[in-house]
Image 1 (cartoon, rainbow, N blue to C red):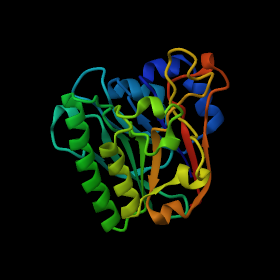
Image 2: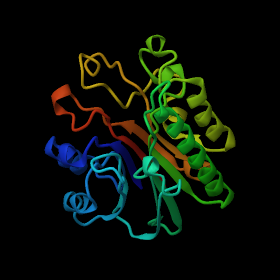
Image 3: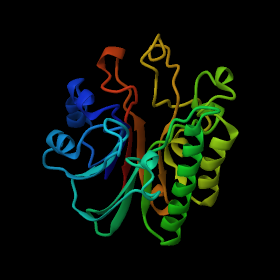
Image 4: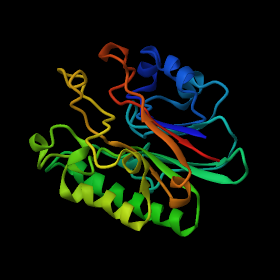
Length: 261
């Protein structure tokens, strides 16, 4: 089963810039999408024939996460943090039938970017608390599960090119990184880091501005966190970085993982 996670930075814009070509070439079985930023009917128009569950943001044109699958969904759950408007469109779960039998729970998540000294950082930590409790429940239930998406946190200095210039800034704060450390210590596996080892990147986000993409001055903020049973089935991991700046359909690149089923 090939699972691809990508922040599309607006699904309309992504397909206008060529996301269809990537979909045909990558041929994922499951898509975990973030920043859909469109109504559900628009998402369905772009993904005909897919089974889709979409968590829309209460704020029009903001956030939005979805799970799209080629295989049937036997259960879906939207949201993880009650009805708080700032947390809407950030968490959605789908229970998917595996080709060889059994169920995998796939979660698409979009964590707040946050800003130092701003209420948005409080929102970020509150949401991460809710997410952490739900992830503990998934582990306790013994589920084969995957939490994938844009976490807006570079877990270590190896996860961004210009780490010295970003000390003390959002996405690199010790308090933010501690959440991810806690997930790993509880049993979740960062499959991209586990496969890559102790090396810089591989990055998944580059600013549209300047020469960040050309110079590979990126951040690794898109993750697939798997339960141990699923992590043991990883066959291949890659970042589908576009060949050139003008061939990007988003400022994020898809994180693509193949799992044995």
